View 1: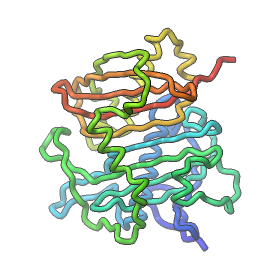
View 2 (view 1 turned 135 degrees about the vertical axis):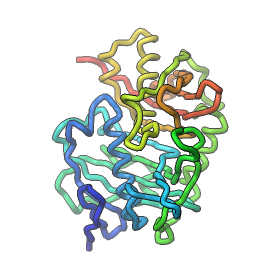
View 3 (view 1 turned 30 degrees about the horizontal axis):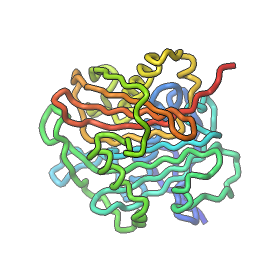
View 4 (view 1 turned 180 degrees about the horizontal axis):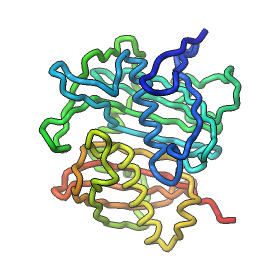
Length: 316
């Protein structure tokens, strides 16, 4: 038995017998491309899933004093498969999205999405939480979002965001995330090391230092914060800069498949802030490019760390 659930301003979600939320979406021009539009769409699906699962409207969340509170992304992972990646999506594709929200303790949640092409078979079985973390469902994109509620700590600045809990937020009914899959460990380690690099990783084969100025016309969202999807765009810009520095063409960049994207969000930024960006790359045992990117404010404070694992696709 399934139940249709309301989602504010969005197509309805259907709750299946296994407790996962489902919807089918048509990919439009505003949802795909060599940009961060699909990442932004994943974020919207996360807000919808959290709203339904936690019985609230995340688009109008406020604290007890009526101040705005926003659902943020502390950790964002998009793990694609050889059969389906964000780079392969185009106009008219139909996707089936299965979503699950788990409690991480406190006011934090872990939101999972399993994205597949829609075949019209509504009986298609899901993988469940344990199966999700095997990442072996064919032709699937697995998405993990570690979400926390935040608000501004001062007027007219995105610096110094603080934790907050919105009125009406409920998570007592949520399953707890299994300890072996908690995102807190990944987030804490990446923040401590200012990188996803491990001691066992090979030495970087190339390094690059860049400066990026946060754009007032491109990078902010509707409430003036540095948009979470803009971090993906900034990282892609840094990866492309490294790509060109290695003598590779823009056309080969557009053919690539990013099989794993990870970002840990540490802080936010204002328009016109100058960011120092460090990029390194090496090859892993599978022959994939592994590109690590660190974003800092110019005072040295950490903004975000990212990693991409990229497969080259030969030209025609």
